[in-house]
Structures are given as C-alpha cells and as structure tokens.
Length: 171
Image (cartoon, rainbow, N blue to C red; front, side):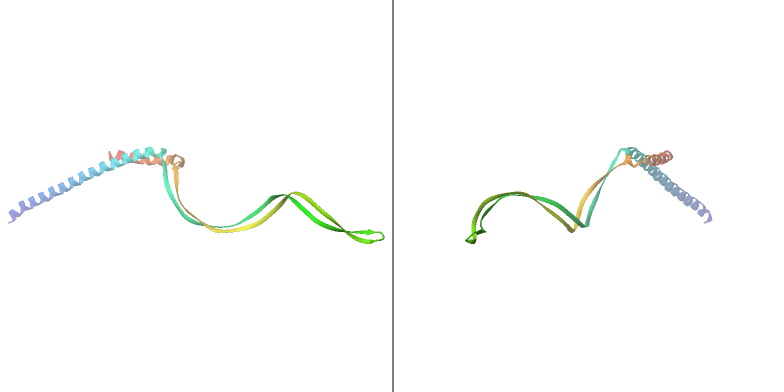
C-alpha cells in the first residue's frame, strides 16, 4: 500500500498544483482587467480635468425662510392745500350814531359783498408708524461659479501631475 500511496500523493499534489496555477492565472487575468479599467478611468479623469478651468458650475440653492420685520417708520411731510373760493357776506351792522337833539340812535347798515380768497395752506404731518410683520421667502436662486475665478489652477495642475504618474505606472 505504500507503493500505491506514493503515486496517488504525486497525482494529488499535481492536481492541487494545477488548481493553484489556474486560480493564480484567473487572478492575474482579473488583475489585468482591473488595471485596464483603472487606466481608462485615469485617462478619462485627466481629460475631464483638462476641460474644468473653462467651465461654469451652476448650483440651484433653495431658500425657504420667514424673516420677522419690526420697524418704526417716521413720516414727516408737508402738504400744500390750495384754497380758492369766494366768501359771500350778507349782513346788517347796527352803528350807534349820536344825533344832537335826538340823542343816540342805531342805524342799520346793510353789507353785501363777495370776498375772494386765494390762500395756500401748508399742513405739516409728523408721525411715526410702527410696523410688525413677517416676510415669507420661498425662492430658488441659481448660483453660478466660474471655476477660473476660483484660482484653483495650481491645485488642478498638481492633481493632473499625480494622475499622470498613476497613468504611467498603470501602463
């Protein structure tokens, strides 16, 4: 039985070695596919990074807020009111008259007149008004950022240099 065990162990170790070789080959193939995928991702990232400085990023910002408002508003105005009219006067005035020998007598004098009135009256208004309210704001504001204006050229150049090094290593 010892003689049969030797070739059996040999065949078994040969099968195990072949299985290990197949698993290693499969792992190597998968690593090669992974390396190609990573290389393609790095190349696409560098191409996208090259177009980034000329881009404008637009981010919509939603604002939904209620702001309380409390204010004292002074109002100081002067209004000119023109008055253009005619005032009719129709009356009788009793005038005491001292007549010699007769004594004092009352004489009625009728007065009839139209008095024109042309006046501009200035009416000053000085008042403080209290305002207590709240203002509800619900809007969406687009915020545009020009990436060239941010001054990130140095950061982008450093990132591109690192990606170039990774690309060189993956090739």
